[in-house]
Length: 370
Image (cartoon, rainbow, N blue to C red; front, side):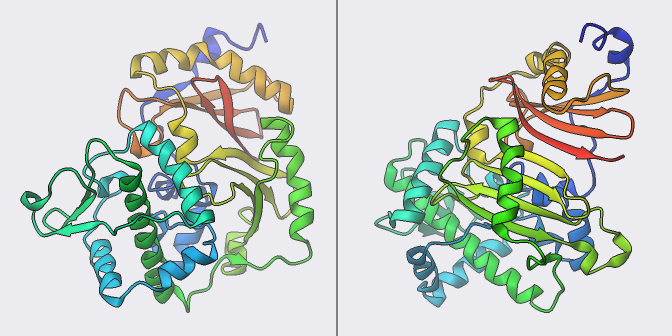
């Protein structure tokens, strides 16, 4: 390691506040934090042509029966209200639809209450209030204001307020899914059924990669879910390099806000394509750093990151490095850095990693043969 970090190597590092990523990663930056499924959404959106919905961050978790019944029992008038909200929602990130961003503490509380909402049927006593103008909002309740098309949040949110917020978001996501399904019913999907391999075998194959990065018994007792993503099935000209399995470990009652884990296995050679911890809950738990502090850590943390890559995967002496400060995608602003991103070229193998600044740990690794 003594010879890896030197001025010649560091001179090859390209530092930018927003390292230009793949075009399709714009979807990933839209709503769900660190979602590898959106990392590969370029092939998806090129094929099916509903990028507007691909970027919305539609909740992909399975509803529990009571929640599903709650969604399906919404009156038509309420459904039309949510359709109208969606039509008037021009925000790029989740928080753009709110009057203010959730604090880290609120995000953690929301993730906890969502698990109770989904698995225990813990619902609010009332629906979110709706008013025509901002002047009509009392400032103390969760309220949708038609004048600016935003969900307004009081400064101090009670548990009831947070449950109303969760209920509103869940219903809006549900209606969004129904609208998207109506549009894409006749469109071939790159998400296919498993063939020639069982879900249990994929979970078994992915578990060692998960434990190598995050430790023994990580996500023990959590639900597992497997998806087969095969864009070559809809467009053979794409080749098979983007055909892969996604193996998820999800909390009981968890949602797209909850911390979860994912392992990506390439279909063509069964190699590991990526391993990651994800979710707004995970990011909210991370320590925040200023731009100046984070940028200084780009250089000082590099030897630690390289040491971990060598220890875990055997790669050393990169040809070049690119890096950037990350702010939990678009939901957090400047001077609120949570992660660093490094892209290492090891000569024929690219390793793309996310590094949690606070705990000084790898949050994700991706492997590419170019």
